[in-house]
Structure formats: structure tokens, C-alpha cells
Length: 551
Image (cartoon, rainbow, N blue to C red):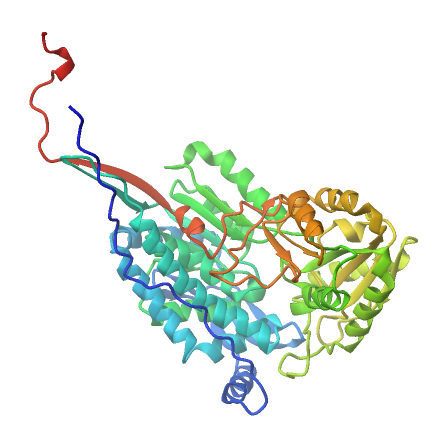
């Protein structure tokens, strides 16, 4: 007898409609948002905020503090931040464990409601506060802050809530007399979230994407981006995030990590930062793996040596604009920033001259002056590191500084947008991540298109972002094939930066990370441990199967 056909699962009703992206304010002269942002900038400049730790919902003050200063005016303190140590790290673990018992059992819709409420607050009354803190604390222009600390965070919280519904709606088929279902459980233990300075939105996502799926987090924000992170934490509290779900502990990474990585309760690491640091974390987890309750989930986005490669059919003006915007927006301190460019010799002089001319027009200074395109780099170590690469270019016999190159740290950590020409495609500036306003261009023979694609693919250990410029369809096809594994985010006739949540999920492979695509359902899946449940309505009462019956 043919058995009945199993029915396809209906799945859970996500209940949250697919969102659109948060509109970007342009802060044009005379606009109300421009006036509001300028007023908030003046207010925050005139105060020194105290930033305590937040552990289990309580503000914790320690005996050690540091001053949070403006990169473009390093003598001006914006805040005084308390520093967590080993004791505070352990307290954060204990607080997260206490919160996990209840938070992990909330309905996912109720957890999403907290983030959706936070998104509404940020899109409205908190917008200027977060943007001003990001501009002053991280030296971002109004536009760069707007697309980061307002729009991207709002998009993360709205899209991730929608994606969470898709995860929970993923249900198995049920056969006759049986009900099958998937329980998308959170991980057992806490998630260690480690965020960088360059995007306020990254810290907001590293913590809340695991929390949305029922996890708890211990958050160590970058000390150089801590002001914006502090306001994110306060916003989440205002939106109703329960105490202990996210514990905020800025401090010395080594002291905090030693405690957190050795805890049996470590459930995962959500990281954005340098490749070296992520590899260190991975090795530390490996050394402790037998001590953990479960294998920790390791999700990381790290460095990049992001490229633009141009075919001789490319539009020279569009190419030049992409080079300048991709390399110099936010002082090149984006992991997706254009850092190496390959230009065919048939259009080299034209493109070079356009790039040099545009670079010479860029204004640099205090982001509160809305005429400026660039601010300062984040701190003294970054200034010294970037300057050393520029000095090397000046001293190198096979490279020339075509534009910029000036460095001035007298008041702020200012480095001019710098364009370098390298004769050797294996030059140090073509291969190493600089993370600053320096872009290196190399001219290749147009007839060497295929071998140049192989060169682009093999030059760097990273595979984060990259772009190809061409109007020839065959050139685009060959580049897409040759560079398939060279970038996790690949752009055609556009700069290799500026990914938008819900449109271009972000992440790279090779030495650039685990490629778990922030801003997509793929990232959320990493923060659940599914349980399959089978319920039989009328269980068998005889052990014998029909085939065993006598003929």
C-alpha cells in the first residue's frame, strides 16, 4: 500500500514585513537636520561625559580611567571612560549567565520588538546624538556618520528582525500522524563581541544579532570608538533591553580576553578587527577547546587589501571618481577602502591626471566644518603607521608620491590623501594593508589583461572587497570568473566600498574572515543551535513490522 504523501511545512508567520532601507539625510544648507546636528555637535563639544561599565544593568566605576579625545583635536577630551579588568570581566560573565535563563526563553518576536523599538528611537530622537558622537569621537564627516551611526544601525535592527522570522519559519516536513518541528535555540553560554573603532554600527550589530536570537553578550568596544558605543548601549537600554543581556566592558583587551576565553561558558566570538587579533583569538580557543561546554562559534571579519582593476574599455571619469571616493572616504579607515588599483597603459595618463586633480581638491579638517571631505586618522599609533608607509614610498626607488603625502600631528592626526604610483605590482604598498588615506596605482600593459587578473587574485592573502571597471561584456565575464574567490563583495563599475544592509551582505574569505555576511540571514544562523523535535500522535504498540508477517 502506498503511504500518504507528507505535507510541506507551513512554517511560522514571520509577522514582520520586509523593511526598506532607512533614508539618508543629506544635511544640505538650510535643512532642519543640518541645524539640529550642528547644535548637537556644539553641545557635545562642551561637555565631558563619564562612561562607566554596564554589567547586569548596573553602572560600574573602576579605579582606572582614560580620556576619550577627538582625533582632529587630540587635546580636547570628550569623555572619561572607566576601564574593565579581570574582575569586571568575570562579573560580566556571571551577569550574562543570570540573564540567559529568561532572555533565551523569550519569544523571538518579543526580542525583535526591543530592536525595532530601538530602531525607531534612533531614526528619530536619538539620531543626532549618535551622529554627533561618531563625528567627534571618530572624526567622521556628517555624511559618513549618517550612513554609519544612523542608517546602518537602523537597517541592521530592522532587517535582522525580519531575517529572524525567516530563520524561525524554517521548519521540516511532517508525515502522517507525526508533527516535526525545529526549535532554533540560542547557544549555551555568552557571545564575546569585540568591535573596532571605525564603524559605530559594527558594535551595534556584533552584540544585537546574537542577542536577537536569544543569546547574551559581553561587549568589549574599541577604546578609540567608545563614545559612540556608549550611546548605542544607552539607546538599547532606553528601548527596553533587559539587564545583563549585553554587558558593556571597555578595557584592556588582554586582561579581558584572558578571562572570557578561558571560561567554560564561552559560546561564541563575534569579531571585527585585525587579522592578527582574530587569529590570536582562534588559537586561544583551540588551546582551551576541551574546557568549553560546547564548541564556540567563531565569526570574524578582518582585514583587506581591496582592489580596483580596470579594463581598457572602462569609463575613465567613473574610474577616477571610484578611486578617490573608495580610497579617501573616512580617511581610508574602512576595511573595504580602495587600496590598490590596476590601470591599463592605454588610459594611464588620463586616469592618473584625473585622480591627482580630484585628490588636490579634497578638503581636510574638523568634521564640524561641513565643507571638509576628510577628518583625521583615529590615533597616534595609526598616524605613525600610515606615515611610515608614506615615508617608505618617498624613499623607494620604484614608487612615486603623485599627490598628498603630508602629515601633521600638531593638533590632530591629519594625513593628506595620498596617491602613490608603483612600478612593481609586488611593491610593499600594493600588498600590505595600510588602513589609511593612501592608494597605490600600478600601470599594466593592456594586452596583459588575463595575467593581470591572475596577479590581482594572487597578490594579497585577503579576499574582502574588489571592483572591476569595464564596458566590454567579455572583460566583465573574464574578470568575474578569474576573481571569483578574490573578494567576498565584488563590485562592477562601482567603488568596492559602501555596502548597504539588505542589499549587499558584507564579508570576505581567505585572511579577511569567516564570510558570515553581516546584514543577512546567514549571520543569524550562526547564533542558533537547532533542536529537531518529532512528536508521534499515536505511537506503535507492537514491535513487529508488516514485512515480518507470515505469508
